[in-house]
Length: 361
Image (cartoon, rainbow, N blue to C red; front, side):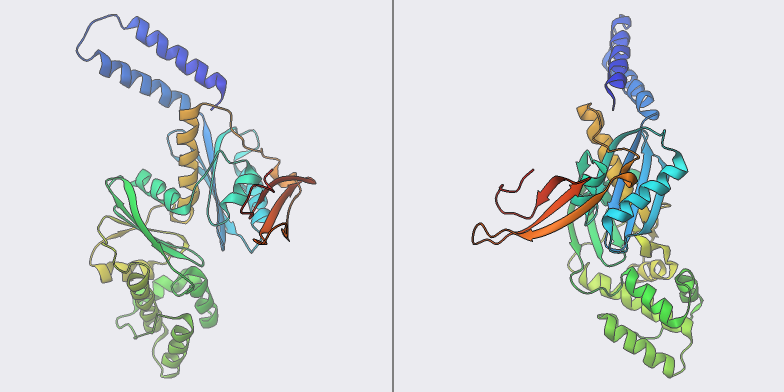
């Protein structure tokens, strides 16, 4: 939030308080509602950016002061988080224009620390917090979140609007987007058609879902026996959901309403398998693929309206800046820390990885 906006808002609030001279038992309530209305009007024309960089996808989202999505970008990270953020900024700028003023930035995802440096984030938070905030913005009564991305999956439990527990998959990628993409390619079926084919099946073939290797071997065996491809895909969907619930969701009290998000939420076959397994509705929000980025943007909004200082956003020229990372092993003590240096236009802007403060910038 800019200082000018803050000043104007405070000035309007003072005028309201001075002009309200009539004594009333509801006076405090009226003042509060008026002030909140003025703040909402001031925020309406401000915009906040959220960036979520994961192992498979890089997502950017811009929201307005009413926490409504204005524009979003979903692209592949391709193992290059810096370049994917720069490419995402280019695409976002093409959609909304570089005159679009950003009042706050949030970063999340597995590469959130690096992302925060690149974009100049005002707040950096983990994915659990970001996804929880975004989900509660859609529905305040959500109690369980299923999130399945390209290479990881997680479950978040929410009670009374607060995330109280979570779990993530470990080394196994069974049930994640990358495995589904691999099987779609092997079957020469567009991944977009996977879910539709699963719903056409009337009899799911039993598929081992505890391991990607076993699942693929089982699918090949069932193909060789002559089972219809739609039955195999439905069997795979059920196996992956079973694996998720028995591993990621093991020991968790899964209560509704349930929200399903992440790239795999686009697969209606997986959603259907969840609903049949749990015997209850599973909600897929409209912007399921970029919920992490939306959550990061909301967190930035919340911070900026509380602190009222200028954003650290680097600007729309991020793609024009030269970023690189360099790693080295510090041998100054027995810890032998592996230190990462982040360099922008030839200048080191951050270091991390050391157990002491020797390399702090």
